[in-house]
Length: 56
Image 1 (cartoon, helix red, strand yellow):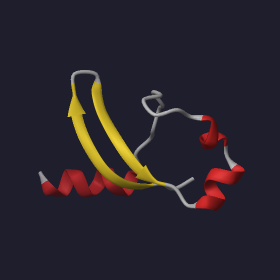
Image 2 (cartoon, rainbow, N blue to C red):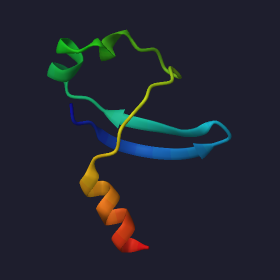
Image 3 (cartoon, rainbow, N blue to C red):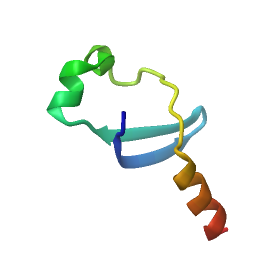
Image 4 (cartoon, rainbow, N blue to C red):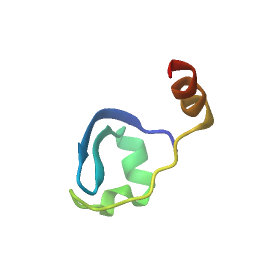
């Protein structure tokens, strides 16, 4: 699934992100069961990695 990142905050444990989720995605996935503060694993797409590399 593709998520839209709203904000990113660095902290001692890594980072905290805020995302926008469209109602359909929330309805048809298990995201509806997550609570605020729940740790999840996210993978960054390859295009984002290439862009980060080019900007360095």
